[in-house]
Amino acid sequence: MDNTLPKEYYTKLEEIQAADFVVLELTLYLDTHPTDAQAIAQFNQFTRHSMQLKKAFETQFGPLQQGSINPSKTNWAWSEFPWPWQV
Amino acid sequence: MWTYEKKLQYPVKVSTCNPTLAKYLMEQYGGADGELAAALRYMNQRYTIPEKVIGLLNDIATEEFSHLEMIATMIYKLTKDATPDQLREAGLAEHYVSHDSALFYSNAAGVPFTASYIQAKGDPIADLYEDIAAEEKARATYQWIIDMSDDPDLNDSLRFLREREIVHSQRFREAVEIVKDDRSQQKIF
Image (cartoon, rainbow over all chains, first blue to last red; front, side, top):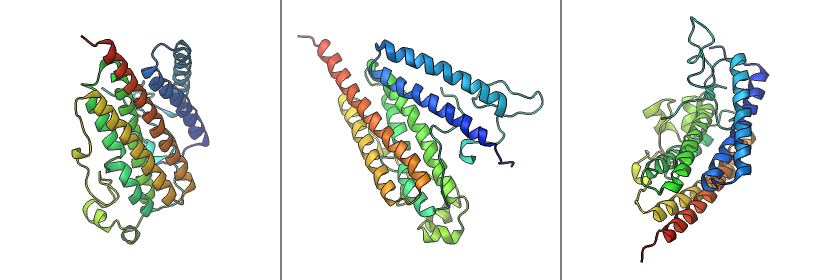
C-alpha cells in the first residue's frame, strides 16, 4: 500500500470539507427555516462551489464520490487507497 | 438510499498511539449516547414524525453516520500500532482476546451496543425531547472525554463533534416549536 500522499491532497480535501460543512449547516438550518431566501441563495452558491472543488480534486487524485467516472479503462480506481481512515 | 464519499466530515489527526484514549472513545462508538445510537434513533423515528420535520431527522441521522466514521477513525488510528501489552495496560485485554485489533460496537466499559439504548414512542413531542436529551448527553460526554485527553490533535476533532451536538440540540428545539405550531393550527373544536 502506497500511503504517501502529497501535501496538496490534504489542503484540497480540507477545502472540500469546509465547503461541504457550509452546505450541511445550511441544510439543517433550512430544514427548520424553509422560506429564508438568503439562506437558499447561500446554499446554492456553496453547493456549486463544492461541486467545482470535487471535480478538480477527482481529476487530480481519483474518485472521491461513488459513481464518479473512473479515470482508467483497465483499472478500477474507486477501491484503491486512500480510504478516509488511512490518511 | 445513500452514496459514499471517500472523505471524513472533518479531519481526524492523532498525535500518538494511545489505546487508553481509544477505550474512552468507545463510549461514543457503541455507547448509550454515542453516534451509532444517535444515527439509528433519528433514522428510525423519521418515518412517523410529522411531515414538517422529517427532513431534519433524516439529515441529522445522516450526519451522525459521518460522526460514527470519525469516531471509528480515531479509535483505529489510536490503536493500530498498539502491542498486546499496551492494550492490556489500557484495560483493553478483554477487547483484544475477543476482537484482536478489530473495532466493535461497545461502550467504554466493554458493554456491547443494544437497541434498548434508543426509543421510538411515536409521540412526536416525546421523541423530539428524547432527541434533545440525547444530544445534550453526547455533548457532555465529549466534554468529559476532552477533559481526559492529552492529545491536542484529537481534541480539535472532538471539539468539532461537541459543537455539532449543540447545533443538533438547537435544531431539535426548533422542531418542537414547529410541531407545536402545526398542532395548534389543526385543532378541531
